[in-house]
Amino acid sequence: MDETTSREKVLKKIRNALISKTENPYPSLDTESAVHPKLEDSVDIVFAQEFTRIAGKFVYCENEEDLRKNLLSLVAEKKWKHIFCLDPKITALLDKAEIPYFNDDEHLQEMQAGITQCEYLIARLGSVMISSRQISGRRLNVFPETHIVIAHSNQIVAELKDALRLIKEKYDNKLPSLITVISGPSRTADIEKTLVMGAHGPKELYVFLLDEES
Image (cartoon, rainbow, N blue to C red; front, top):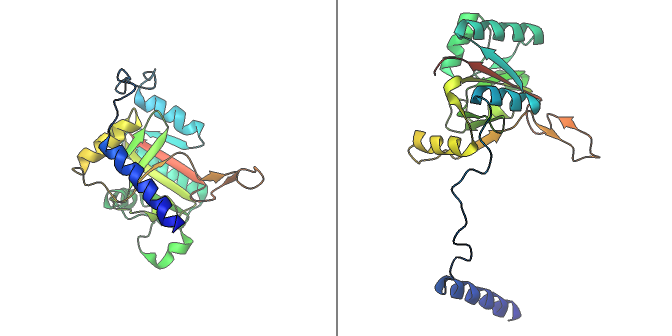
């Protein structure tokens, strides 16, 4: 009985609050102005600085040929044998570079690196926005030890709000079921304040920025 009474009291307060709306106590509050100062540099430079500051690895590519060379160099350096990629645009590039990859689940447990595109790059945060509506889906952003993102210069935006506005426009307000902002490689210091990389996702995060429109 006491529980029912307490519940009714709470519901009554909610009903009264909905009926008796109060005036805005801060009518002159400015909610439209920017919170942060304007970026001092171009968005690509700011993104590269902020991304590397949070342990991301940034590679600038002038054109597609430069992108292929940089990818080949990285694969050779890391001696990767199992690269996973589902995106046809990227697999076409890997075929041209003669970089072996797989796109089936048979060798998924052996995956060393996953290559995907992204939705947007956020300069202010040095972060990568991805979504479940991308061809690569959800798992390539968390499963491999190394996540490689191939992005284009026209995907860089200044602020998070810009990326959210554009993704709404891109999908005509039918937002993906998952939108994630990745800020550097996965890490945690929950246990004894010891930094552990790759605790909940990739140990390394690369962004290859192609200076051409997608």
